[in-house]
Length: 412
Image 1 (cartoon, rainbow, N blue to C red):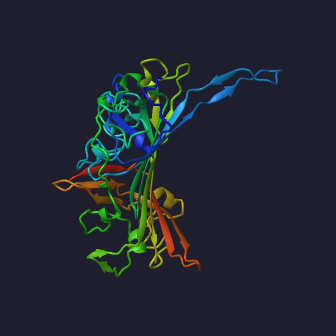
Image 2: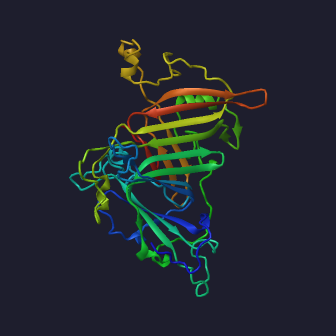
Image 3: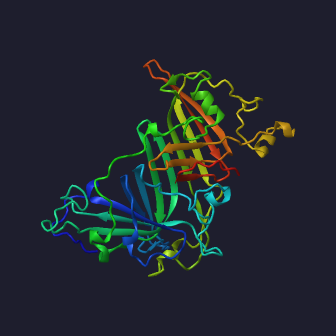
């Protein structure tokens, strides 16, 4: 790798970095050209770690092991960002429409479920993540004076090809929403032939800072967003006689966290490191298979105004915490079908975007979520409030993060 700068950097910091992504549901890439990738705005931090597994070979009779065998390297990229109202989420289905099947996370046009090609040549959604590093002498990338600063458009370009997502998480707090994405790849490419910034499409900088905030979310079902919260959450944080403030209900929720963890099984391919051959790096995920169901959790944390009135899994009536499916309930000796409980809690969060017609950001975890735990803490003599965290999961692999002018009511 060559360094293109006339004046070498003293450091790399946030102002001289940029992140680009290119996504696909096909195996082959773009021939190694990173200049068609999309600038990822709102990035707050990006981290890269490399694991190089090594095994010292057994050498009987010697105390000095001389021979080391390396395994295939694995590189992890973690991106943390805020969401601009005019931007898209990192992952979205190919088409958000009023159809449960085509919007489902595992649909071949969306995230997919395996690295081998299906009948339509579709594979796991994979990403080329390209990091640009510019000179540290400028306020931000590309901000040097044309004709005066020889390093103005010089960059170091590094691509992590065919990366697959291992985790997506969203945290909504009083200070706004954060998106965190973790990806995994087995290759790295230094783009010496693409070390000129003018070859990349970069929006106007600095960014406008029009990001999603807490006030852009409407967590009431009667509001603009058509959000849906589980019964227990509404009982816990929104009392039976809600107070009104500016015609909005006071809800004690302080934060909401969504976490999607994707685990894979790699089918054995003895004698061949897929992705290690020159010009065949795109084969690295060929035998990766998603382990099902996808691990999807959601937690609501907030200040308590009351205790949960019904905290018994076997209580009847509307307030019953119906947190389990038929099989699990039957194992509790519930033999009558009328006693079977159902995973039936809907979770959907909606926030206002921009545009005309009005755009919405949507996080839809489906209608088959169930409660897993309720935790209480605080209320000590130091004056802290009593807070609660209530946790849910689903076994349907239901997860949609999308941006649309319509919020659909999707039913399995």
